[in-house]
Amino acid sequence: MKPESSRVVWQGLSWRLRVETVILPDGSPLERGAIEHPGAVVMVPLQSSNGSFEVLMLRQYRHVVDEVILELPAGTRGWDEDWQACAQRELREETGYRAQTLTSLGRIWPAPGISNEVMALYLATELSLDPLAADLDEELQVQPMPLAELIAMAQDGRLQDAKSTIGILRAAVYLNNGV
Image (cartoon, rainbow, N blue to C red; front, side):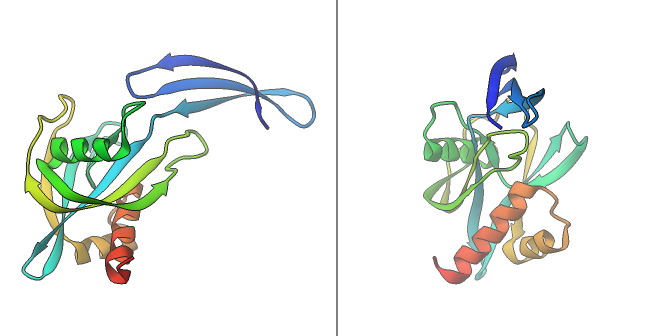
């Protein structure tokens, strides 16, 4: 089912809501909503502490779920922004650190049923202080946590944020396999 017609019904700074009309096999039209998104980055900022790994996690209030949640640093990319430049900017804004090395952990579609958003995941290592001002609408608390604990939380459901769960598990696989 390819769209027969399409129109933008709302546009914000970081995404657009499009309504598309598709034609069903029986010939009848069906309207569907779709979110156009420039993409986002997710970082797993890793530090070594006493021979084990710690990840700089965030506690952040998310109004849509009306809760403070535990999540990896992440952010929306500008429509034409370079992926790694975006990752570095978001890491500096949200944690106050710059990564010497950003290693790709792949890309995911967080909600392909409603959006074309792609999230690029990065392992951020060799961190050094280099803060940027945070976004005005974000109240963030950086919380270093042991990677081993985060892996357990991702596996047993205590870590509920999907991008963070995937980022933590992909980082763990990368670090164990050295791939």
